Length: 356
View (tube, rainbow, N blue to C red):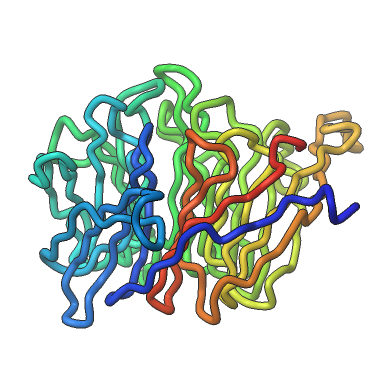
């Protein structure tokens, strides 16, 4: 690829933090974002920033509070664009929904015994009911309807030694009844649940702990899913064709970063572009290339998926510590915010994404 045509990852703003950040999210339809984490005294810290060209460093701190135990994960997925309420999971297992305007808790439940590792929402501004899914250190995966306090679905591992659930995500939310749930565990398991039929549709084992998991689009018919793992690998599964005799879905595997891949984030404006978050502090940008035929016939005449390939468009070293969180702006192409475990956050701009 001609380097003059490759996307460039440019640091727009940088700020050092006094705490360990674990997640960051853009507030929908705004130039503001939140960062949350844990202080040295094991308290939860929440900060609200705004991009501001008039201030030094281009960032303005609008609000900050310290409360409860450390904050681990957050999402706006179950909130409407009108309310823009953020759901937060913490180190004590509490699931809380916070009103950003008043900083008041509008919903709170004890969701898990111990840390909530992962949290995602669906239905806030799309199809289906507003729901949250949580994955915890206790090995449980729970789905919450924010209009009631008890979980509507609770999935517990059958093993005596329960694996941690490290990653959860929603997908296939293309109408009011369809919804899929994917969960990844520290023992390498991935499980795909159909929430409409309450059925385990597929499971597999990647032989390494699953750190990140994301459908390329949450609100469309499921197309593909990316899982990131320990030992520097990510796996892409084509979800359009299922073949029970040959392991289920077609899979492409890439080994990158040379360290744990902490997560994956697809570009909201183009589902075939995504970044992976490196445990070595690097950020890699990829493009997924579809095969000439997405399915062929196996020996029995049944359809079998064909995996695609990926092209790395660019790579940028941002820190000496892992990139812990990353979030694209859904409103501005190429704008993103991220946080690293060296207690820093950055706003970046990735150029030329419109060419892909």
